[in-house]
Image 1 (cartoon, helix red, strand yellow):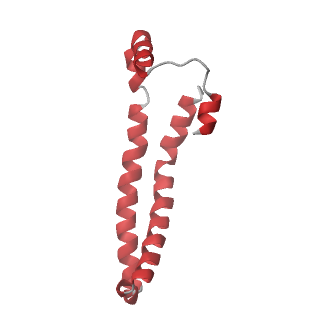
Image 2 (cartoon, helix red, strand yellow; image 1 turned 90 degrees about the horizontal axis):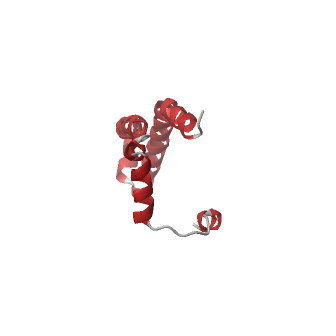
Image 3 (cartoon, helix red, strand yellow; image 1 turned 90 degrees about the vertical axis):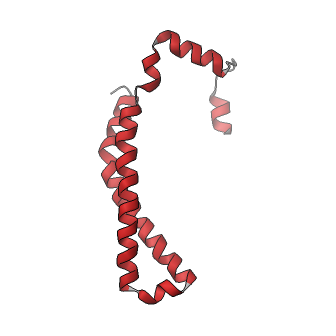
Length: 106
């Protein structure tokens, strides 16, 4: 994006040069945050799909007529997606906090 390019240093380094520098310092640095990333992403995704499916089923059982209408079915999917997003955010929040603290040096 424009902001990233504007804030980037003026010197130009290739991907190969950056990889060489990273491997020269400590090759393990490339994988430092992977465990925490998985600790956030796996529960987030699992919760999102599970809650979306359960919420969709519950909403369609409450409003069976909505299943036959395309636009009303879309509303059910959007509401179920919102519910799943909130639940997933709650589940993944502790890992998000840890990632933020580690990446900010805290």
